[in-house]
Structure formats: structure tokens, C-alpha cells
Picture 1 (cartoon, rainbow over the protein chains, first blue to last red):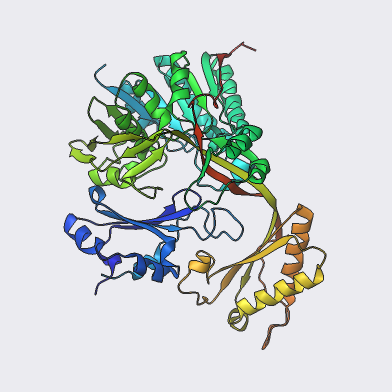
Picture 2 (picture 1 turned 45 degrees about the vertical axis):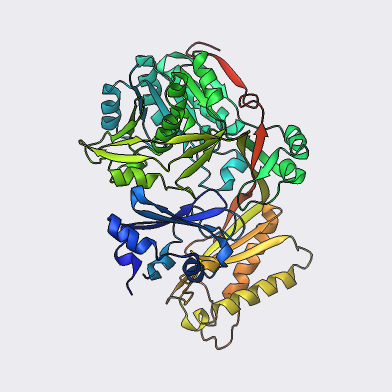
Length: 100
Length: 454
């Protein structure tokens, strides 16, 4: 078992519009992308973020950038009461616990 | 014309660009200079209030070079989502800056101003006629939402900007516009492939963010040909790589293979990204898939109250060990003391514990010191001030169990400790509107403006 963060070039989060939070994981080459990419599942993401699996909207594999994109429902619309991160730029660190 | 060249000076008008890069771009003889000025990223305040999230002097600095370069070379300058959110107050704010610059530069220009505000009564009729759809996790739209929004805009497609170009505009100042349109309007008008034009615009709109190393304040240059386009950075410090350009396709979107916009979606399933020498990247194969009906994305924000905050640190480990309990007790005291004021929200952000991730935080064990932001939002600024002040003084002197530091619980960096932070808005419209005519909702005001014209 290895940590995805040890092989990923990029692990980042950002709003995808005011209602969704999107995570990009990018890998250095096709082999790593293929090996790690297939291990990323909705149930793993839901567990890391302590959310229901239905809140994980999509996991999309994007070969041109050796990237995997994960999108979840934002805890609240951007800037709504109780907001902690308007841009959604610092919501990625639970992904450092992701293993493959 | 066998190729069409576009200079994108900066990611957002007002974010700046090095003049050295801009001049390299001008030497390549662009056919248009285009810049996106907006984003919903900074949150609902800017759309709701009508304020710009970029500073006036920074926008004026950028525009001075862009206007001079465009007028000198007789090429159009196109600005999209003026003032950050593209509602009428934002457009008029930006127009005043352009007028001021033309006066200072002693120049005149044929200027097209395209507004994107949506009439509330019209939208309620369209809602009742079933022409409005929800978008993703946003709920159903109601007439109350429409009436409550202080600014309500739709993202225009290519058509209004193409019309302004056909009418000979030298500077086009557009309200809320789908980001790629300011780049794609001229090539589509000249008969270039719409999918490639929009896809190139999609990348150019963030300028050198798509280069490596990325920058939001440097230029990107796009060259469009019949069946592909090529991107390049203009600073010797950065280059476009296959990965940097492909990766940008992911940025701030939920699905990189299908990018929806007015009238249809870009389909990237067949797109290829090819590295060329000299830090350039060639992109080809993107398709445009029109939707059966033409949809515009609506954006609105409404006022929810006024905010007051107080910032304080906590260092005492006995207090830190029971911080959640202390916050809960303070909230109870506030509620008990102001029983007649039910209509407020009191929230304590707890940095050092879960201030950044809130409920998503997997490790809410507190650090050795905590930063607290006590935040009250209420119907009036006075009520917000009152709630925040009372919560702050209650927490300062709260006698939690086992307390040894009986002189005070909070370390304030400032006097006064409380800040009245003003109006608070929320996004309350984020929906799709079906229209018959892509242009009818975007009136174009066109005429010569500038030096000694009044």
C-alpha cells in the first residue's frame, strides 16, 4: 500500500462554480496515471471527506493531462453563511491520505 | 486570412502583465486583444453589491496599454464580464474608466457596451412558462429568489459580441459573458471553426495560468488555423507544455470532456495536445455539440444581512481542550440575553482546529494555539455589531470549568477588537434559461466616445 501523494505531481482543490468543489490529481506519466487512477473510487473519497457517496458527483479520468478529476457537492454554496473557504482552494489535504 | 492571432494580456483585467511580454505579443501582429475581467470565484458579494473585486487603479493601468495598442493598430479590444461580475453597475464602472483614459490619451473610439442584466418581471414570466432549469446542486428557482436578487445577469454567448464587431466597434465592453466568447467572437465571425475558437478562448481566458510556471498576471498568445490552434507564452520565464495546457482544461470545471456553454458544449473526447518546439502546444480535434434549445446561464445574488467580526487568539490549554463547549455556552448566553433578536447568525471560526475545512475536516484536534474569528450576521449592521460585541465580551470572561486564567480568555491583536464588515450576499440564482434569440436579452449601445466628445 502506497500513498497517492508520493507519486502525484499535483493534488489541488477549487470551486467548479459556486455549488461544486472539484479536485485534480495529476501524475507524471501514463503508467502511474493508469495504475493509481483505477484505484480511486467514490467510496474512498466519501470516507476521506466523511460524506455520503451520492455527494461524490463524479470521478473522471483525463488521459491528456494524466489526471483524475473528482467533484463533490460543496458543503454550502460559495460565500454562504458558515463559509470557510470561498475559493475552495484549501480543501485538498484529506487526499494526502489516499492510498493505492 | 490563413491564421488568426489573439493576444490575451492577463487572466483578469486588473491583474496586470509585464510590458515586455505584451510588446512581444504586439510584435506578432494580433488581430484582436481580448481579456476576461470576471469570475464568480471571489464569492457572491461582488455580484450582489455591484462592486468590482479588482481595484480601479489596477484596471486603469492595464486598460491604458490595451486601449493604446488596440487603437494604434486598428484592431478590436474586447473586454468580457466587465467589473468582475458584469452587471450594469460593473459595466458602468468600467466604462467610466475607459472614458477617463480616452480623455487622458486624447483619443476617441467607437465603443460598444453590451449589458447583460435580466429583467425580473420577464424572468418570472419565463419561469412560469417552464423556461428555467436547475443547474447541478442548485435548487429550484422561485419568483421570490428572482425578486430578492440585487443583481441578476445572464452569460451572453458569441452572438452579441459578433454583432458589435460587425457594427465596427473598436472597443467592446461586455457585461457578463461566457469566458471564451471575447476570444472566439472574431474568429467565428471570420468563419473559423467554432469548436476550436471556443476551446482556444477557454484556455486564453486565464492567460499564462495555462503556462509553466503558471501566472495570472502574464500574457498568452493564441494562433488559430483551419484545423488546430497553437498556444505560446510570451515571457522567456515560462513556456506552454502539453501537460500545462491539458491540465488547464481541468481548471475550475467538473468534467473536462464536456464543457457546456451558451448554445452547446465543447466535446474534448477526441482532442489532442501536441508539444511543439519553442514552448508551444498545438491543440486539435475538439468538437462543438449544439443543444436542441439555446440556454443561457443565469447568475444572481441577494442581500442576506450585515456582518461584524472579531479576531482573537487563545493560548490557554485548559480552554483549548474544551473550546467547542465554550463556544456553545457563549452562543447560549447570547441567545438568552437577546431573546427578542432571533434573526441573527453567530458563527465562530476556529483556526488551528477546523477553521479551513469546517465539517469536512478529518483531524479536528486543536493545535497549541487557536485563532478565533467571531462572526455575527444580522438584518442590520447595528444588530450584527451588538451580537458580535456581546459574544466577544462573553467569551473573554467566560468561566469555563477548571479555569485558572481568570483575568481574560482571549488575546486581541486590535483595538477596537470588532470590525463592521458590511453587507453580506449569497448566490441565489444559478440556473439555465431557455431563449429563442441569443441576442435579444443583451442590448448593445454603440457610439463614438472619448476626447472632447460629450
